[in-house]
Image 1 (cartoon, helix red, strand yellow):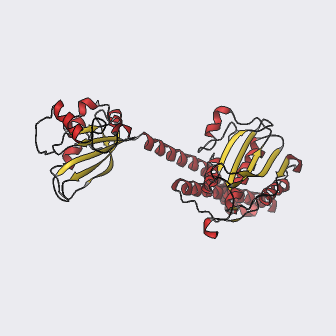
Image 2 (cartoon, rainbow, N blue to C red):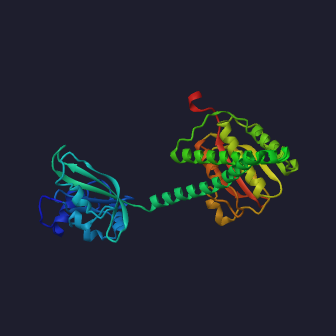
Image 3 (cartoon, rainbow, N blue to C red):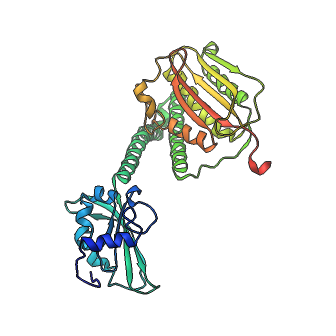
Length: 380
């Protein structure tokens, strides 16, 4: 890396640079204290020597700021790419092409093999003039690694959940094709019903994956229209009763009048289905559904619709309540993908609402979600 001069600045030079560029708390002339930045910030002057090395950079690199200040950039940050090549020699910010403005973020290695995300910006005196500052941003890779682990866990979970129903479908269809004449009509019907149920399970899992993808990318589409939330709750209860549940197990309390609710009816059905299924499968006793108007805590004079689903089971342990809406949380009873409540939270928040979990008066779990009411802005 070629630089303009090789003279190492002394303490007086660094102090003078700090004074000229904004004072002791602003060594980079940014109008703020670099130590307040969440990412590592390293700035080198026109000679290639470091004039700013903030606290985050010291934490990420394990290099003291006092040792870095005044040192050549390539010595204070001896970065290598994943193939072992010295990064500053490859990029040559001071002696390379005059049209370059920086380096995109990439994974590089610090001494000892620690991985760090690095990007750089070249500030020039003119469009193609000499570089007067090299600004380097350093980021820890731990957050990205957590995301990658989460994605890997999602893939493993999905693969496991898909394998069981697909194995069943393949086995039954292969058996029917090979030995169709040997089975009675009742046996054929049973096997086809099993295939149908497993196909529905695969379809639900794929739908969950699509929902997660849209929620994570902020692309969950809502088709808002007037929704009768009381009628929606009634339909779900009727479906449970028709499938064999005792009607006396459900208690629905509607507080009238309810304000007009504009929401995506399919998405609201998905929320209600998940919360009721959790109460029926994992709870005990009476499942109570309360629907009532509520004042908006975020908007003065605003109104919301609040829906509470509670049961009388053992409830959710206090230490687990903070993880209920995370991916793969299944509680004490195994079963399912553990993605349902994560999707529920994403749907409610996409509507501008909130969802919480707590302990019901009867001792079981209590889920409460609120949805803003009133027509969308484009219809007003």
